Image (cartoon, rainbow, N blue to C red; front, side, top):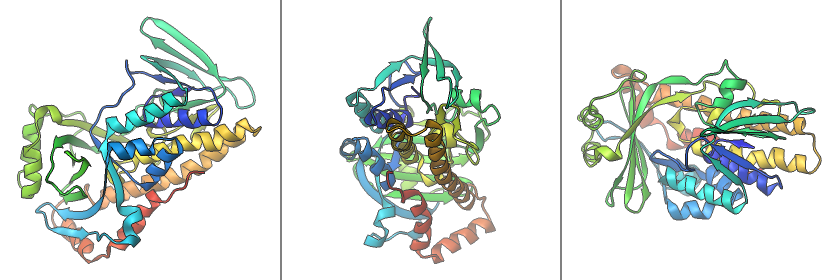
Length: 386
């Protein structure tokens, strides 16, 4: 049983099905789908997609591009990353719309014979015991109730996880201090490479997600839950003194294309990803700041590892408790490393205020060789499906 029909949940369901398990996915929304704008899939994410049979669909739906580097708000390069073979493993990315990524993974789940149950609001999860009673999940679909026992429950219900709230009540998601505008706009002329621009307590980024679309984001410090009377006017005002290219991108955005969400994360992630027969994956287990852009790829990794480290060994006679412990050790070690890198990147980049601190940061970037920064990026990209 998988709770959550996002990318992490569907990837987990496919990998378990590949290992011979019968799998059902519970999705709270009335339909399986995704909201949001664009994202970048790095090489590790493509490897994970290949393991569940979705890589070709994602390549067809997205745009292969690369990381160009970092600029100051006036458009000057702080660090320009050269297109050389030694860096391509880290710099190559696939930009695409979140909805297209989700659709590709959903198609893989349907092809694998996964049972998909939409409109299912989970109200209770009892984790059971690895050497005793099975787990039990109770949900509502309108006025009707559903309940099933399961040998394994995968909790993939996101940063505001209902399962985490029940099984780990002392680990709520925390507001990061920042919020983020995002939009996908029609565009055929802008260089498609990912460019990240740092200003005082603000980051702006843009990249191509198809031949005719550009994705941009504006991540900035802001009080939690605060709103603007006119979001687009507020965005245009915030970036009014930035480079002409950024002003043009925001000016080309319409109100219906723009969205904004406060950013929440789990500092350090959960202290364990397992509870009884329940395994936590994706943002439910380790929601990180978006500053290294590895959220979707890490969620896909989790999904593949559910099948490879839990599903397949148990199918072959291994003890469930031992398999769960192996998953926890492998995934928690990796995801904590990525989470720490995301926090360090935020402190050095978009969370940094103006004045002398920003001047010193900018000077350090101008002097540093790109390969130093790419070593940090390799911590995210270097992964091989087990």
